[in-house]
Length: 280
Image (cartoon, rainbow, N blue to C red; front, side, top):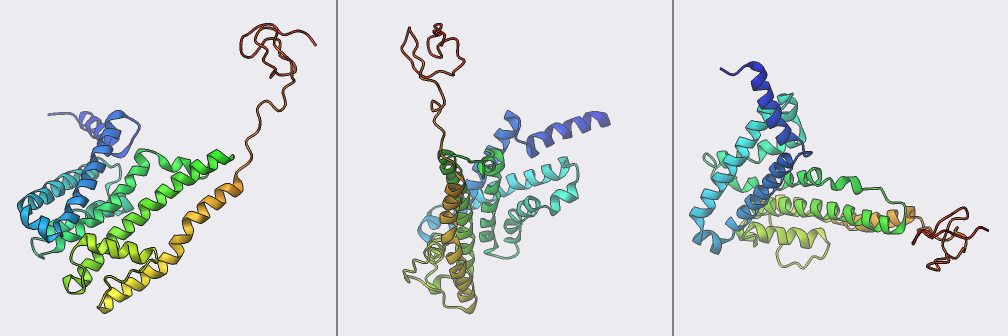
């Protein structure tokens, strides 16, 4: 039988792959997990479209269980390799990981509950840990860096808003149903985008009390969300400093070989060709 040290070493190696991103294996694991999450969410959305679901019902059913089993094994592996399993289980990612697999099992007892696995979209937040995009936030001092930092923040903002619209659209689909025009989750997502951006085409609207309450919350959020990108860019531009001219403080000493005239006052050799400069 393997020793305790061997077991501990095996758990440590697996835990390093699962919980960190500083090795090729760990990064490959997280990227593969993100791909599985995106595909599972995409499948759930397509499954609510009648024409597609009717033709590929068995494929969607099989895919749903395949993804659920994959995420279940991942969740169990995280619990098994975490230094403090209870702490992981109570953490944000731990709760999301659990909620992303429960609906499929609940669908055995409650038909239709599998649509709630759309909550898996929140697991995409891991992408910021994998690619370390958060390090770009607030690190700009000059104009180009300010624009670059704003771009990364806006990407984070767009991903967050996209996740919100997917969840809200799914909730509206469950609350209102087909009688109110919410014939699928993509239709609900479309309504959420139109409402959240305060465009308000009015092509579909909630009819139930629960749907109108949710719509009111989304409308109020819309006013605050619209101001976020403007605030991000404005804040970064306010903190930005003009890019200094690297040659502004250099003496106009001309190199006898290449005629370059940008050199430090105490330079002895040309910065471009290396030729000796004339003494001043």
